[in-house]
Image (cartoon, rainbow, N blue to C red; front, side, top):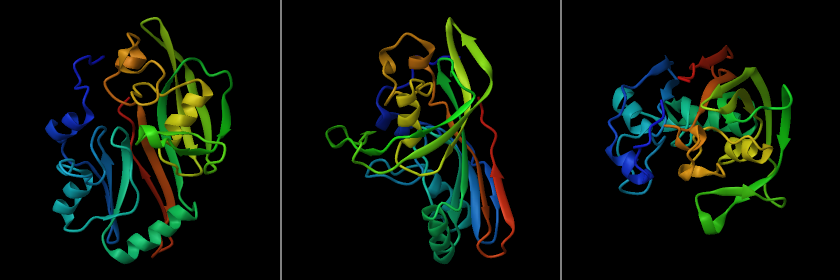
Length: 235
């Protein structure tokens, strides 16, 4: 169902929404994994963006929540927090060395021509339009593998496709920009979709960004046991 009454001001939306109950996926002696809701900040921002963030809610539940990685406020899915500084440092190394396999699910506009592919386009900051990023051929290398899942779906005269995304690098807004550059922006992306909120299409008026961090896979730094943290998308 399309929501045309969502606040246009993202700051207002973050400040006044009622948090959903914290969905815990896994509690380990060294970390906790949760399913972050969409339109909730991972960590506190500059005041007054410092209420009801996922980190604060996890810390209130277990007493400590050291930041390992982040998801965009508009993105839902698997988010990890360390329970002590040592494990935080170890997992930061894992992310930096790309020892963690990340899988996202998204709905994108249009019909993809191929079943799978890769997007290898460097990205950089769009300083005049912060916090937006941009394609920058002198920027940082950015690589995303994608795979189409199932046939295209029709909605109100428009077609969209479900894709699985595996980002090899972890640049800010990487998946959103890469899919836009491919010509298939993510459904509900008000920051990068060329039609944006003004569109009368389902893609402009979607109630959320249809991007979800579905799975993280890694070897436990302490035990060596393979870990697979999964959260099914709500779409």
